[in-house]
Image 1: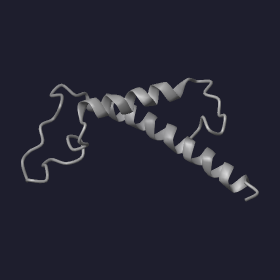
Image 2: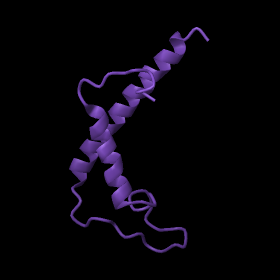
Image 3: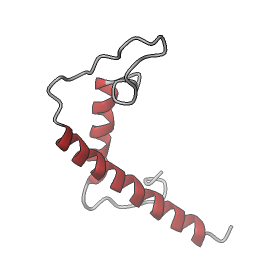
Image 4: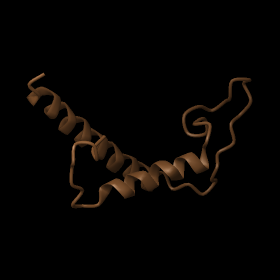
Length: 84
């Protein structure tokens, strides 16, 4: 979407956030391991990594959330400024 509007990425954040998303997709393709303790059958969902460092994960997720909030604000401002 950002490419469609010709948005520059001077900090090169786009590939970093893409790598984060791809890492989660690789680790947890069904999006269950880090959201739910059990699957749809009630069986425990195994955690992909037993040595997960939660403080680092929280820091990375806060950074990704900031990126998406910024994108949302930018795109909302474009919509608000649109003559349509």
